[in-house]
Image 1 (cartoon, helix red, strand yellow):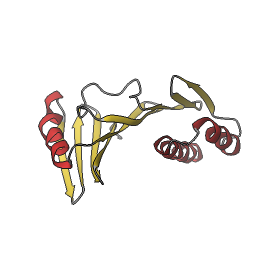
Image 2 (cartoon, rainbow, N blue to C red):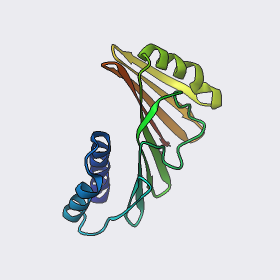
Image 3 (tube, rainbow, N blue to C red):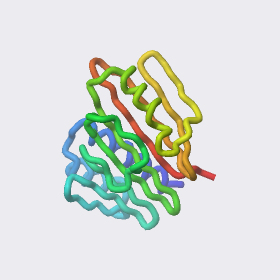
Length: 166
């Protein structure tokens, strides 16, 4: 349980670091020294960061999709990748990506309504609020959450795909 909390905390901090553009290497080095007692390994290269424990791994990519991002999930055309990461734990995997587009929320929502089912994804639920839309879909043993949110003159698209829990 403690490992899961530590890994979740580090993942959330890394997401914040990547999205704010802070010096990843410096912040991570300090954070790992204080929180893991040397149990986590950090590898850098090609704008990717990999954190490993004995049974878990988190891979983060900055402004590119991490390897393993599902090809059957539609990505909004022309959207810029802000951050992407992959988490592997025992026999479960999860992939997340964050994109930005200057197109309207209505246009992006229409794209996902029209294209999410084209590769076999079944939309189970759609939630809409004033400035956001959430799609929840399933395919085989995977679930996907696609969140669209309007902020100023841009739409943020967050995609989370993972194996279904039992």
